[in-house]
Image 1 (tube, rainbow, N blue to C red):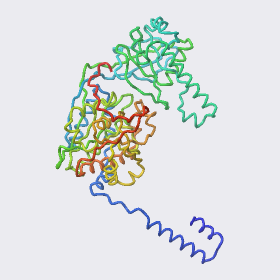
Image 2 (image 1 turned 180 degrees about the vertical axis):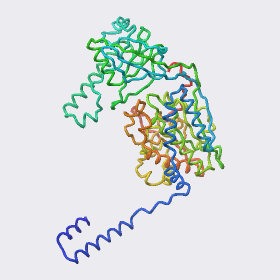
Image 3 (image 1 turned 60 degrees about the horizontal axis):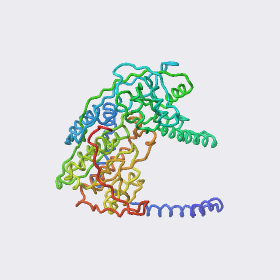
Amino acid sequence: MVHMNNAWRCRHLGGPLSFVLVLGLTTSLVTAQAQWRMPEQQLEPVVAQIVTEARAHSQLKQLAHELLDVVGPRLVGTPQMKNAHDWAVAKYADWGIDARYEEFGEWRGWDRGISHIDMVYPRVKTLAGTQLAWSPTTGGKAVEGEVITLPDVKDSLAFQAWLPHVKGKYVMVSMLQPTGRPDYNWEEYGKPESVEKMKNERDSLTERWREKIAATGVSARSLPRIVEEAGAAGILECYWSREFGSNKIFGARTTKIPSLDISLEDYGVLYRLAENGHKPRIKVETDSKHLGTVPTFNTIAEIKGTEKPDEYVILSAHFDSWEGGSGATDNGTGTITMMEVARILKKVYPNPKRTILIGHWGSEEQGLNGSRAFVLDHPEIVQNTQAVFNQDNGTGRVANLSGSGFLHAYDFMGRWMAAAPREITRDIETDFPGSPSGGGSDHASFTAAGIPAFMMSSLSWGYGTITWHTNLDTYDKLIFDDLKSNVILIATLAYKASEEPALVDREKRVMPLGRDGQPGQWPVIRQPRRSGVGY
């Protein structure tokens, strides 16, 4: 209102007096604003050193290169997972931090090898695709066969009668997508009626595909194994992530024949050729290796506490990944963030009050197995843990923080966050006391044990469609400025949690009512999967 009146007077009064009046009012306004300006934040000396080290001497890019480009993806049971452990232990040793290997189970050992997939009829085309995790090998030879689609059958008897037709053929077990353009691309350029038509068509095709699978009498999960037993040459699927060039790459359900994920574009070519009677043929060579049973493990590092060495602050991030890409945002980002936090704390806060433990959990992707095993195998650590800070969902700066259902989380987390630079915390949305997570990431393993454990939830950067479990989860998707902010935040929280005079109050909230009208239950401690048999 003041600005509007001043502007009117400038336009209509004229002369030196009006100029003086306006100038005086403006000066008074600026002075008033200055008086109400938030005082400049004075960071604690340790926090100031954290900020300087994180911004001026960051090692995030080098860590990312070594982990993602050199070591690569870290599927449980693969040599790359052990290579990642050896790399991390050596890196910690360079920083003067002790690190160790902790076995908690076993898995199927597997090494990827090459994937060559070519269409050889009705024309020659090299196809974009890869074998799924733990896929069987073709034995180093190229296996040629016709590509066929699943039929529309009346019932399970008709499906069983059809099964002999798969012998020596590659069977397509995924629905043909009606479009290779993401929804946002349609919505930007398409007419509203065209967008609606596409979505209706996709919904209809999805429902018809469900009906097709249901009619066979077997589940989509069991279908590859049934087709394998009938003598198929291989399984072809396409798990499109609804983003240009992005497919989600999970595990094979076969034990004798290769299972392959094919790009949406090339899967569509094969599917249309097969459906229109052209009998396409492909030649496949995979050179994966089964390595028997191998250990599964966590990599644990720690900076020993001085005053309370038997109490802990835990930095948490899972080490393993799926391996369509290189496991960059899931969870290379969490891994290198926690390593960088540890490096900086060792440099600027070398004698923490409590022991700072860094948990690089194994086999998270198969059910939080590493962290669940740690909780059960180390009750003496867990019961004396001050707090757990976990990061797992991408490359963005922390945007949300829940109190995880701990009634007094606001009291201590509020104090700890207030010590961090305001430009990092000011946009974080908090939810106190929040609710405990029953799964999703490793903080849930500790929350179930009654330990204050917090997920550092990040801005998306297209995480769900572009990088989460996809072939595009690679180094080039990392946003290092955001990761630096996360390092500063988490290092500050860890420092303050270590300095807290006593263990914080762990009282749990009263859980809200569920759909049945009864109070919800706090998550329970769950057993890890300690064997890959049957997975």
